[in-house]
Length: 555
Image 1: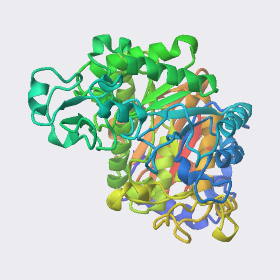
Image 2: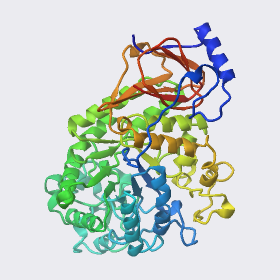
Image 3: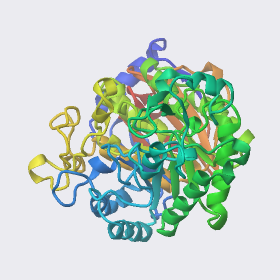
């Protein structure tokens, strides 16, 4: 026999059973065994967490909005240091900081000085204290490194535009204003194969008869590394390697590389992967455990896969887009197989490829808002992210249900973190007035801590679970037999590592459903959403699942 399902809309006897069980259930804590009705025969047994962070979960911090230590309204490095205990208690093993370098913009992705820290964020001594405390808590620190472009106020670029004789002239991409397309077609502009007028901008002073390439904005001139075959010999390449080594000497674990598919214009050629391979190898010469992850923003994992020939880790945007479809359409059963297919493709390029899974980030609509401000769906998104395979990233504030859509600007998904009620919140930033993540729309962290049903405690329970069980953090995924016969609302899969095996079941729908599990198991570990169990015989149980609920069994 194998696990099977029954849809209660078609099975009257299980409908009656489900209703009876739900009426008998009166417990508000869905993580403890219910001593009423059929569920009294089962005891939920979860291993004690020994404190080891097996899940290797990273937490992205938008520095300006996270925690303000000095009352100037701007998040800073000392604020992050003060909140490391919170992240440690949450179970986080690494943090990714958005750019901390001097920049004319609030977001920092146009850098003026790669070896310095923006004074609004603090000093180098503050950063060294952050690294020291993070190391004591076994939390890795990863810096955002923007190697695709600089700020137009960077001294390299201001020198380059001042004269065609500048020693930095070849560090950027220039062409005569009246013949940009001609220069590109004749091969006079390295790294570029086609002309897009929106990517070329007039030089405002100095060599004003030229234009420069800035794919994202006139504020962000592209760096010229030359032909990819000789890029490692270019001065910008060598300088970026030295910059990386400078920060490694400060104790960072590695880097998140911004916009890796846009370093060379043709994102589907082998140029960017080859460049990234050269860069990774050069930076990792004296650090064998270097962590480096790339952002290749695309909805097709097959286009991401070739980049694993250059980098050990890449963000999986496709997995998030597919998960949105799962949650909006209650079509869940194929998702674990999708993740398996993705990982197989990635590992065909790099055997130890790190599949960095995520929900939203600083460039995307926040998860809660993207899912229609639906708490059940937001919790289910977390449940799936933290039970399927992958190396999960959390965006700051996701764990408290922060909201925001990019419709009226990126700033709306980068709002201040709510640590406590505003009158008591000494760390809340105020660099701008938020409109989405405000009280009482979003309950501050401190209040959520005491609410067993809060989204924060949901995240915390899942992170603890993933840190406790190696089968969830490292294990392979196994699809059950007879899988094609399952209802599309169910997401059912096994996770297995060494002698540990778990069965994970999610009801990703807004209706009650029952699932018949007829394999031997040791005990249920944990449940979310009021799941109830009823024994049919010595080896078969009925699992009654309310909307957007989950259960995990130890096999």
